[in-house]
Image 1 (cartoon, rainbow, N blue to C red):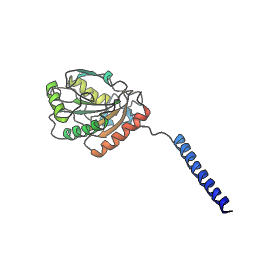
Image 2: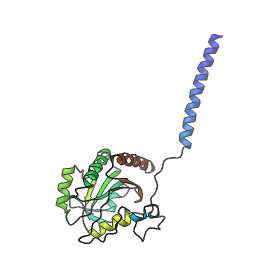
Image 3: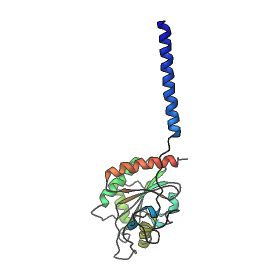
Image 4: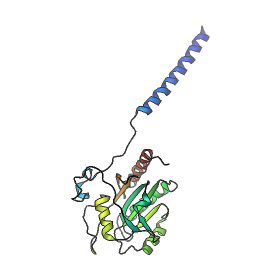
Length: 225
């Protein structure tokens, strides 16, 4: 009788364990996959959106661009084709928020330096000061890995239009004039389809944890080939 009870207990234990495994599998299969929002101009603080785009509800993508990086090479949106990337706007002589932003971008670089799917992109908002030589010196000083992170200079008006009309990152319009200036702490997460998937405070170390987590979520949506 005792032997029979022992066998039944073993059977019940195995059955219970099997049931838990099956339920867990069903739960994982049926649980909705986490997905990041696809930001449209109408979803963003209107102060950050050009008046021509404020009511746009779909199909917003980063516009084409052609600028020069810290190595004197031309970089376009095609260099980020099929990539996930983080973008920001900075300048090398900034004494306030930029050092924190660059340090936090460096933290992101450290976490994605062996990941071929993720890249970084920084646009100078003072391209008349940030020459190729200046960007190269800055890149060396800050430990920029050329294959992971482009620092871009070039036509000021083009950069300002990208900030305002593509990346939805700044409150002032800016016309790219000699005395014009924009400043933003935003990091922008962009997917392989050139769509904005997140905004983060580039001066906040805690926001970097969220950004790294969201990059992983995005990689589930766009698995590396």
